Length: 217
Figure 1 (cartoon, rainbow, N blue to C red):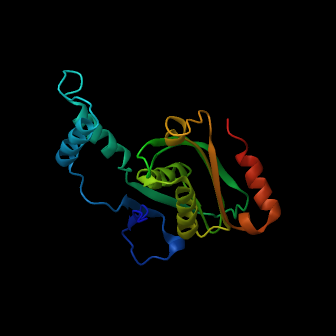
Figure 2: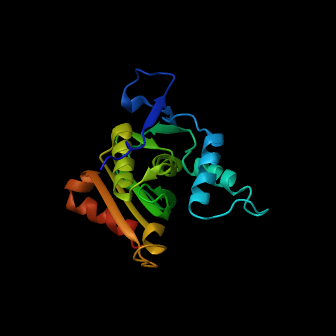
Figure 3: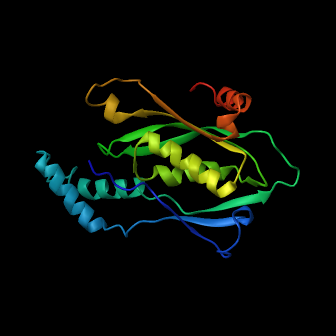
């Protein structure tokens, strides 16, 4: 089975040849082709009518357009600046953001999955603006995804950009393709994790991260 390539990050910076540790203001945008909302609306109308759903009533006449715009929004991450700062104090303990809201779309059924992510890292020479952990998650979540890939993409990307001692990502999500159709296992959540660097190789650091990430609320 052929899969679409994973979401990619395009990085623009005023100092393109600066070393990784000096990237204090990377501008991150999504590599994608231009959205054609007109074509998407026509296709959405054909899709609905093929399933026997009328788009002729006052209530449904605008549904194909709303459907096209909704998916375009789901698949359009916002650009952001990956701001980092020198770790002048030599902080070497875990930095963890818990319960970051997550929403993405399953690439197999194009149905949403929603949940939370816990993202942490052990700093190296630079520390990251805290809001950027949520921005990186949104960047990779705003495409058709599978949870396993999403978890690894976030961890790998942070590890490559920050050069930290370690990175940990845990995602807990409910997939509507599993709860609303098929097996209809309502209330089921899926947990995935990726640990890199010291958070993978050192048992004490790994245990600390997993304990602080904690069970889902």
